[in-house]
Image (tube, rainbow, N blue to C red; front, side, top):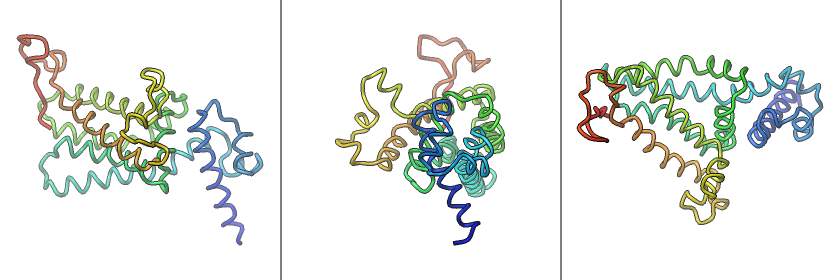
Amino acid sequence: MSEPKNNHDTRERILDVAERLFMEHGYEGTSMRVITTAAEVNLAAVNYHFGSKEALLCAVFRRRLGWLNRERLQALDVLEAQAGGAPLKPSQILEAFFGTLLRMGEDESRGGMTFLRLLGRTLTEPAEFIRTFFANEYAEVIDRYKLALFRALPDVPKAEIVWRLHFMLGAMSYAIAGTDVLRVVTGCELGDLAGEQNADAAGDSALARRLSQRLMPFLLGGLRAPLSNLAAPSAAAPESPGEGGQKPEV
C-alpha cells in the first residue's frame, strides 16, 4: 500500500473520529488526547495533517460543507433555470436550502445525523474562530438565497426577510443539535416524539426523515406569518389582536 494512500486513510480516520467526538462532547470538551486515542494515531499525525485543534474542527466542517454548498447552489441554479427568469416560490427556496441539509441526515456517507448534530451544536454555541469560518464558508450561498427570497417576496421589506431567515436558521440549528433542550423542557427524547415505537431500531435515517417532515412545514409557516406593524411600514393598525398583518404569498 502506498504512502499517499496510507496518509489519506489516516486523515479520513482522524476526521471521522473527531466529527463524532466533537458532536458528543463539544469543541471545548474534546481534547486532542481523546481524539488521538480513539483514532489510534499519535499527536504528530494530527499535527501533520491539520496543525491544530481549531484547524481540525474547521477541516471536519469543510469536508461536509463543501459538498453541501455546491448542492445548494446547484439546486438554486436548476430552479431558476426552470423558472425562466420568473421569481421562485419561497417554498421552493426553503426546500433547496434547508431540505438539502436535512437530507444529509439520511446519508451516512455525508456524515448523517452525526454531522447534523455537530453542526447544530456548534451553531448554537460557536467559538469566535468558528463564527469567522462559517461566515466565509456560507457567504456565497447565503447571498444567493437572500437575493432569491428578495425576488420571491417583493412586498416584504428586505430587513424582515433577513430576520425571518435568521429565525429559521436558529430553529434549524436547535432542531438538529440533538435532544438536550427538548429533554430538559419536556422530559421527552426526540425519538419519543417522532412517532417511532423504537427510535433506536428505526435508526438515524428514519429519525432524519421524520425531523425533516416536521421541521420544513414549521419553517414555511414562519415565513408565511403575517407581517407585524413594525415590519410593514404602510400597514394600517390591526382591528384586533392577530388581525390586520400582511401575509406574504408563499
